[in-house]
Image (tube, rainbow, N blue to C red; front, side):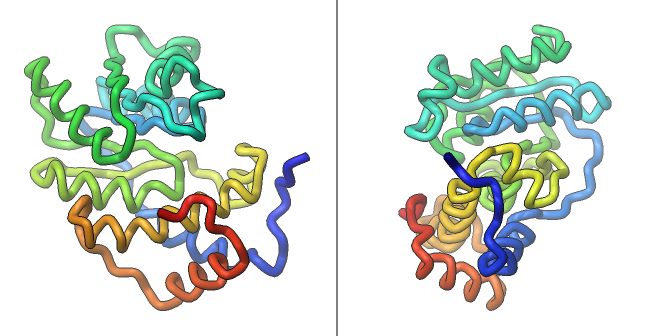
Length: 218
């Protein structure tokens, strides 16, 4: 049985990475809300909540499948996100689906192409993602769509509550470690803009990597 309890000896380092990936953006209305596909259906839930709060008039759900999502969302991440949003009361006309993206760069590029093809002018977007994907999503968007004003958002859950919602503490830690590695690696590969990685984040990452949380490393 998977554990949802964060071990005390790992807590400080996991919290450090968790806090680093939160961009702490202040929410304000935008032209489009973009729900980035993943294994976390909470992304679709929070996108719906923001739509219903009037934060944007249009939603784009983007995502195909990955090894971590194909069993849960066999018809594709974006398709399942859309179905969930419809169940929660979002009108069908307010949702566009981009079903081909297989990474964050694709999410941004394919969504932009979809909106341009429909003649929808976009000056600002809210990127809704897993909490630990915020910083990578932001850096990717600034690289691939630099002229758009980008705000990052996730369900406002504390770390322990998020782990409980996912149901697997090891999975969350592995994903945090993997996303932290990608901040530097993707900038080096010119997939994303460069971002500062403070020393305490580097130290926390190193300790968690040595502790064996390497499943999501490149």
